[in-house]
Length: 305
Length: 267
Image (cartoon, rainbow over all chains, first blue to last red; front, side, top):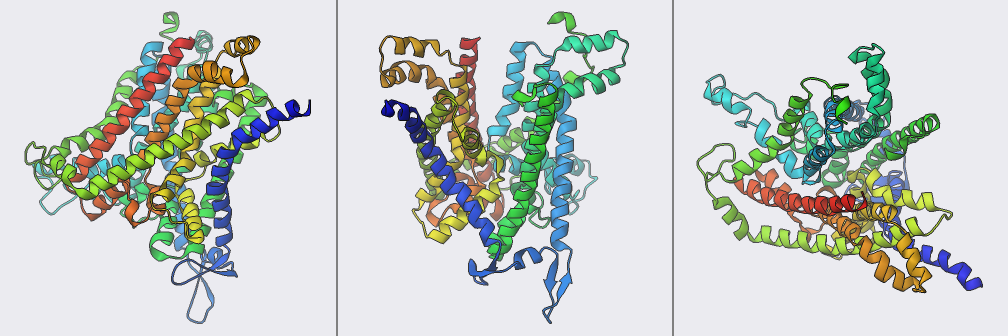
């Protein structure tokens, strides 16, 4: 009966092979090659020279002066810090806005809940580029926001509120793009919440705030953690928003990667930036796994997030 | 649960939720509104007109880009859905095996890695190997990141499926193939359809990865829209964008209806 013992294993292998081969060949291997590229020398005409060099990583903090000495320069460090700052800010704002919405939906009758969730998912599945472009029309010079100011004569013909090409515009664009993936996991954990616990807390004379802090938040934590990570990762690597709304002047990590490959043609440095971006993602996921394990040990309730 | 209605109810939440909907939909509404602007400046309203739609439809570059988008999305969806269905069957019906967790992690990889990183990694490989198949490169890239999107609803459907019918078929001497073909597949179909629709939407909307791997002749609609935005905006961009939005909304609505029926059937 050797054949029948092997059949399930063979079937499993054949079934998984296409998926793993495609993702392995066109995703895992490329990322590994990219990691390799980040340790090679840049060819001034684009591409690489096959010689080991830590130059790409040195470039983050130093530049070479005419005498070939390393001089500290903070430009790229600032881009990393700005990316982290804007991504954290956008994530926190998504959480502050998204939590009450998720809570509200979870308290609706089941029929209505589905419609709310549908309305929140729709924008998420539509084109991000197009949705970001819409904000150019809103925030831009002569845009929708400036319109009433012009009618009232507060803004002259040559004046502008200067909303575009700012960190503010980038953060608005990030929130707009990613807030649905904050609401959904929080909703998923709130939907399972037993509201009798909330009632019990109220019966025991805790204030609304205390109930919120000691009952609702701890029970919604898996959703909050999942939502925050799902928003933070794409915000950190965003390209469209800093490019269109930041005007390509206020670079973030994602736009820096694109710039190095498309315009500056310094592939090893672009690869090194991508590796740093990837390192942050891995840190997030490790932290998430850790949080999931801890919560799992406590209640076993994180399965859904 | 009407008896708990008042507990944990926070005043003003309903208006906040409606306000949130305005925030989500107003920008899209404004974008569509301006696509009906007859004038040549996006921000200056000069009257209602469909002329920019006429112009967009007559634009040969837009036609080619739209055709490319459809070809890529159709081929990538077909391939990704078949590949994902096979993988989902192994994951849900294959029993426990070594490397199951690793395989699952691998399939979810395209969801974890930031798009721009995937984009440049693929660019490096395509450029390094000299692989240049025109639209073929774009299709390969799209199949790769569509797999997890097709995989999720199919696996969910398989997990929620009652296995007693499959067991009955096996008990009645149905071969594995017959059981799969006449029992599992028909019940699984809504899941496969949902997976295919998600991956079609994802493929149709992708911009960053396509921009990086597409050669000169293989521009897709989002990449073309990006180049239009860069050149300066006319209501033509709004017209094309509105059509792309409409396509996604229709597909997601279909997906919603398909999966909702599933929930109703299993409930």
